[in-house]
Image (cartoon, rainbow, N blue to C red; front, side, top):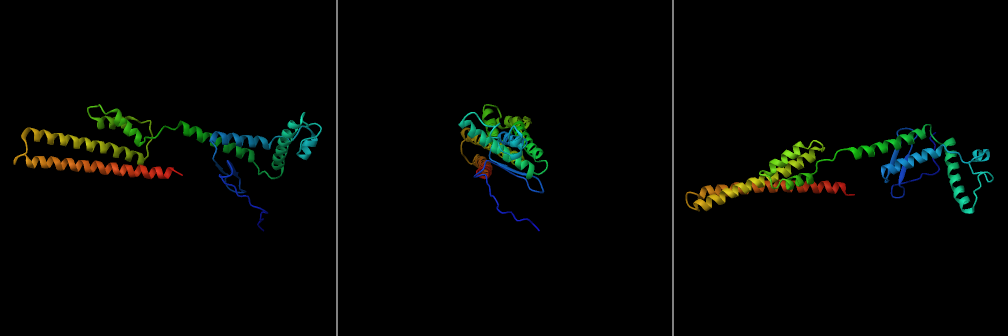
Length: 242
C-alpha cells in the first residue's frame, strides 16, 4: 500500500532562495535564485551541519538539545543565541539519524561542487561573437580603404569568440548590408561622374537609368537584410526578458 503523506509543503522561488528536493528514486533537483558560489557555500554548510553534535556532553547527544549545565551560555543574550543554534543543530542531528537517506552528505557535496564547477566554467568560457561586436569592428575600420573587407578579415581571424549558427548569420547580415550600401555608393558615384562629364542626353540617358536602377536594387537589398537582422534581434531580446 502506498503511503499517503499527512501534508504536502509547496515551495517556490518566490518564497525561498534555495530549494533542494531529494526523491526516494532518481536524481536530486536543485532550484535557486542565489549566485552559484553562494548556493554552493550554503549546501556545504548544510552538509557540515548534518554531522555536527548537538552539544558537548552525553545529555546533549542523547536528547538532541543543549545541556542546561554544560552548554549554558554566560549571558541571557548569548543563551538565546546558543539555544537557537543548539536546537537547530539538534534538529539536524535528529534528521541525520532518523530520516536522512544514505549518502545525503555526499549528494549535497556533489551538488555544491557541480554548481561551483559550472560557475567557474561559465566565467572561463570565451565570449560569443555578437552583432554589436561586428558593428564595433565596422566602426573601427571606417577609415580603411575597404571597410567591409577589413572587418570581414577581423571577424574571420577572431577564433577566440564562439559563435552559434544564429550569431554567424547575424554577422553575415550586418557585413552584407554594409557591403551592399558600399556598392550602392560606388554606383551612385559613377552615375554622378557620368552625368557631370557627359550631361543628360540621348546617348547617356540609358546608361544613367541603368546606374539608377542598380543603385536602387542594392539599397533595397541592404534594407531587407537590415530589417531581417532587426527582427531577429528583437525576437532574441523578447526570449531573454522574463
